Amino acid sequence: MKILEIDIAGNSTEKEISRRELSTQFATHSRDLRPILSLRQMPTISRRGSAIVVNFRSVKLLIGKKSVLIFNLESEKISGKFVPELLEKIRSREKSRFEHVALEAALQYILEKTRNKYDQLLRAADFILESLRVNLKDEKLEKLLAVKKQISKLGKNARELDELLDELLDDDEELLELYFSEKQNDTDEIESVLENALEQIEDIFNRITELNENIDDTQEIMTLKLSSRRNVIIQFDLLLTSITAIFSFLAVIVGIFGMNILNTVEKNHAAFVAVIACLGIFAIAAGTLLVRWMRRKKIL
Image (cartoon, rainbow, N blue to C red; front, side, top):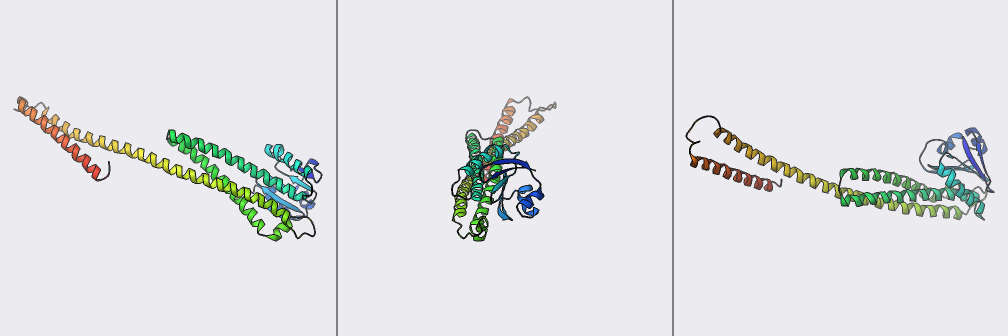
């Protein structure tokens, strides 16, 4: 596999290395390298042998005492953004420990990436919500649902990183293992790095949660509005159907009188007027009773 190795002086070397060579170099079992060699997506910061294994999904590192190995070089953002930032931090470090500088650079990169993704989704959600206020359509609700799924996924990733950092800070033994010095009792430096990252990821996670809740509230309101519109259409359709049924009944009566059968009624003008009047009164009465019944049953 292809990796980039950066030493403690900030010199970088790209090379091919096998899993066996990695296990030998860092005195660890090959199974301990799974977080960076497999498709595992859970965030990881753990000491294995003489290396700190770091997996932040896109960022995968093996941090040693005098060098750091960077994986996932096929990603343009890793090779074009993260690597230059890491090199700059390593070359400009003063009294900070090499392993902590590398870990802090990885944390800051993934935090910035998460924050940028949140800002992107926030703009997309705001645009869709504004469009929905102007023109309520099912298609826009579907777009909002797609954005909400991305926000939920981002929130899940942020929560996992938050839980990882919180667990590390609660375990002094784990913190001590993130030092390569043989005698180390003070964990202030690594605690400062992790606490700073924890504060940032908590802030991002809270914003994501708030955005998710706002979208949920808006979806409920929009869904109610759509349901209300559908109910109006259904009520109108029901009313038209009922009126059609009334006039259909009248048409039956008219059809009976229009049959080619001679009787005394068709020559009587008064009878014609009486029939028309009765039919009109029946239609008005039936329509009025129907509307009152629908209102009493809260159909209209």
